[in-house]
Image (cartoon, rainbow, N blue to C red; front, side, top):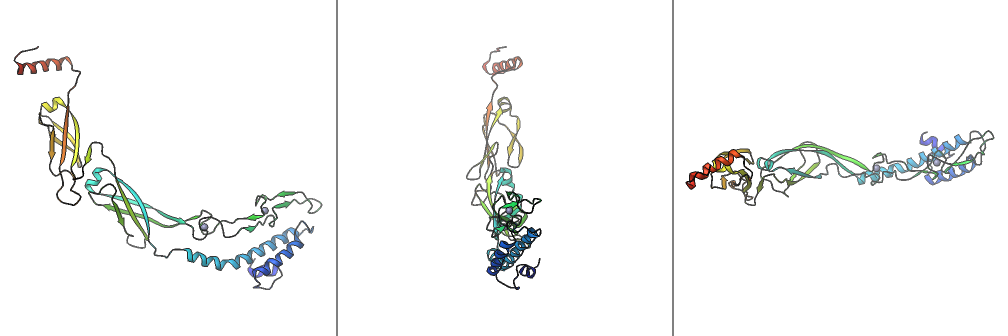
Length: 312
Ligand SMILES: [Zn+2]
Ligand SMILES: [Zn+2]
């Protein structure tokens, strides 16, 4: 049904206003409603009358709602800033790293202001806005009235917003961008990344969180401290062990009697910049309390070499 057909259906000249259309609709409803009119075509006529009013109402409202939508929409090049929390291991902080940011920007639908509904409820077509249905019987239209299932008896249908399909939210932008994070960031740092080349209108704030490390601790001056339990016999025997550093495991030659070791330049640079600080390793020699017979025998022989007596 075109809008002109709709006016004809209500017996109006094209271009009559909405108030005239409503008045004509009320007059026709009182004549054609199946409650009052037993004619076999009454129901079909009612449906056409309802549809006609809907068409005229939609045509009357369309330009206004389009204008409202245009006002509510942000300017086409408006930049939206997305907040991200990025967790970095201490190794990633030391070397710098690349992180992929991807997702979409979702905002409240400007057309329906987030309600998901079209502007106005419409009269239910199934029951002509009455909320009840009269079942057809062999004797005409005098069947029992039952609640209309299409509108749950309210007589009104709330159409979904067309702009957002009733979700109340619309996706306004998508992004997928690889960001190189520099080395030596700190917990709580915020990096701002502007819109990338091309048509993107999305900027990013990256909130840095540095994860705790299993054995390395970063100190304020950039020193990396590491406290390690080591086998006491290996320590006494000047063995070489593997220790963790920011750049992976590294060999350290133990010196009996020495518990603190310094790896020059293996920490972080100070916050203000400059040469990297050191890594400090504290070893904690551990001796077993339970010894095998063989270990007891060897220890006694060892003790005898310094006390002058052979205990074995
Ligand atoms: Zn209904
Ligand atoms: Zn909407």
